[in-house]
Image 1 (tube, rainbow, N blue to C red):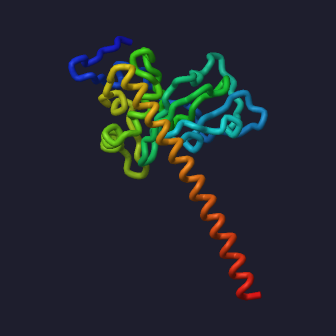
Image 2 (spheres, rainbow, N blue to C red):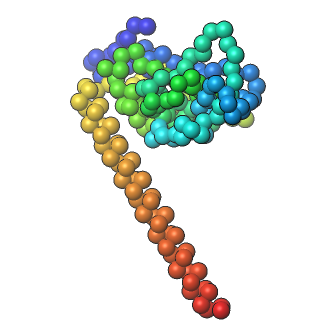
Image 3 (cartoon, rainbow, N blue to C red):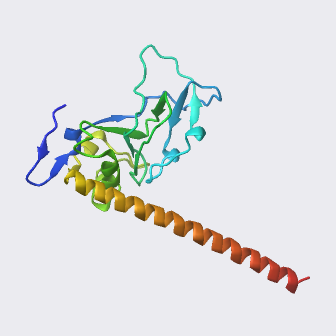
Length: 203
């Protein structure tokens, strides 16, 4: 694939800087097997922060003459179904892992030019999300076409800027997690205190 970048505007068409493919083409429902030789990443396993429980991934059995397209570290997953085309960065996925067909696997041609973490972050920003939602089709359930993903324009600043943006985004995510943990602890404290008051009032 030839990487064609618009240097004057610092942007590129996503399809020109990355390969885009749909997840493994399972036929029908994916059958779970506790001792399966393949793990499957589904929509429910990913978040915008990219974290998922590797041990909790569905296991299935797969007999194949040709090895499937296993996911790799640094791949970016994009939801192909639903109203929220969320993107997630994969970090150290287990061996022999594929995606369900409801996800696109985006693999950058040159990660030294565009960081996978920066691409995942940008895909979750309003400009990209608005484009992807507008391009979604389907009456019963929104479905994102591969061509629409490939046509998305990606901003490509210099690597130092990409690294700075990712550092700020990760710091904000960590702060959000801390705030959510504090709120959850506070709600639990109030609930316990309220139960004590009620028990004393109606004893």
